Length: 572
Image (tube, rainbow, N blue to C red; front, side, top):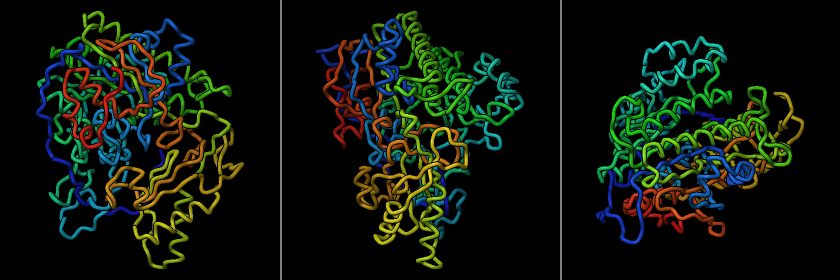
């Protein structure tokens, strides 16, 4: 991911739709015409396209993924949110809302109204600041650690920064055992000094404070049900909803923590990503067994729980890892690294299903398998890596030449395989200037196989097909007009364009390409009919009401469901 903050100042409080959690008064009793389960296990296999799942099942008809799919309903035309980033993608699955409704546009954004971290005099501070729901707000920095600054102290963890890659991989079991000691309330691992400040209260704004609507977890808790989740940053405490208390047991080992003495993190080598994902699998297995994520306290199997996998995502993004080529073959089939990653996920899904069976929970548990996002391009020959930093510098230079003494026009940008910009001047003239510049300039591009610094081709229109600004951008995002948090400019990338200044990745997500948004979606288990829904397009926002429906709860208890009229997944 390429993020650039050109100027930081401060920001104003985002209006929250009903600051506390608003629940429907409808009865939570099960309907009389269908069976409901007691548990829903949600698995997000980030990067998993529907085509990946279909190919894997065809090639491995006796696999866990094939059995899971055959035992339930498969939706072959499912799409995730735009932007297709992890943060809005996961929030959508657990709220039923799109980014403009939830106020979650990306994991790292900007707000024109919030104030800079550390602001004390909120009455006179200049608004405008970065909103980084990433590892940047962890208590551990320099280095970032797997326990996000909890300082667990176990030798298996304290030795990681001095390990070789081989030593970290060999010590997998001990690392998993140690990291399971992480707190179930990772809000405590967030540094309040790193958070933007809400000018209305002059206090730090936590991720959950930024969310406008309630979550599945909050609804479940309001009905006395247990909740748990595992994800990749403490910032995922946002899933607890505006109340901050929706997830009772939240396990968030930091994926961007240092993994060895070379400074690799858990996403820069695919074997490391597998080891990282295995810590969360261990947590889920403990939860299936009726314990907390650490496996030490009997608490009962949660009603709503799950995790995200990163292994497929890094296998799609890394050019090579562990001696294997990443991404896809020329014929569109998974390459060797991705094949290994899919095998790994299949084995972990199998382990979870075996544990469900062992505990006698088959008839009361539904499993939903999907993805926060896909990944693009899947055709390596289409890859064009473009340095967006140089594009931003050029825009600002041109703006300065036309407006001597003015602040840099582009204040903040986040670009993966799309482009989101926040401008210092939001006037129609400034928006038109930025749009015209992007669409009228070529940019040098690095193709697959080109070494770093070599640009063997160029892309037209800065690598974009369309640019939306102002109210048009708000409409695209579903945001209120003039929203202070929504991007001022949204660029839709040409297929194959990845914005990066290096050659460390061959694919990304966040954009609007079919490969970014077309994801797998299967609902299997208790009370779910066996069928393929191949004629009806669905959205991953529909997962949230489906979870409540499977539990016999009212989907309209979700605010986003009521406001956006999000329907539950069809034919369940």
